[in-house]
Image (tube, rainbow, N blue to C red; front, side, top):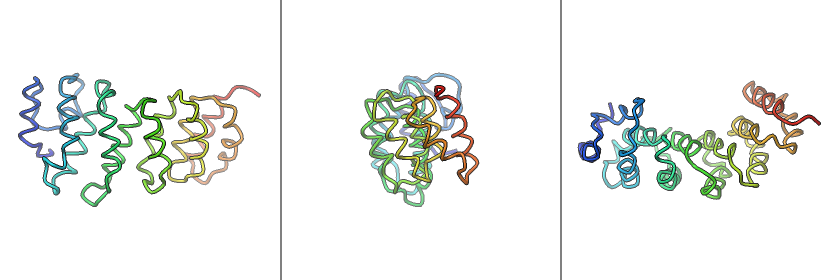
Length: 200
């Protein structure tokens, strides 16, 4: 249980979504599209509405509840701003969840913002799952970005995974170099990505 604020539960009730806790939305198979504007609004104003000591416990299920198709148009700008916030101790690991949400939801209209985050090594592994957005991107900068990130040990495995769908011949030599990487996950992803490339 997250001790979801009663005001948030009331706002959800007003749009016909009755739950006792945010994790019920995260774990349900039912659609709750009408709840998405409420969730986005609460995430945008979280720092004003929830005391610091409880904030991380509310933020994580709030973000996870937004990883639904209905949130694709409205959630990414708020998620991007939340990703940039300092990862203080009570909030530790929440940024990774936000990166995961962005990797699932964000389209090419947010490419530049995500590229800036992805290239910022100070965010460490919190960027990992965000790279999935570049795997489905149609932006011509996607492949060069992912090739650059192959040199970033924090995200190399996810960069390789995101390169696979592009089937871009430019990635062949860099991927072949990773077949001897010290991490088994990187070697496996490189092998899978190489199999997707057109024959020479």
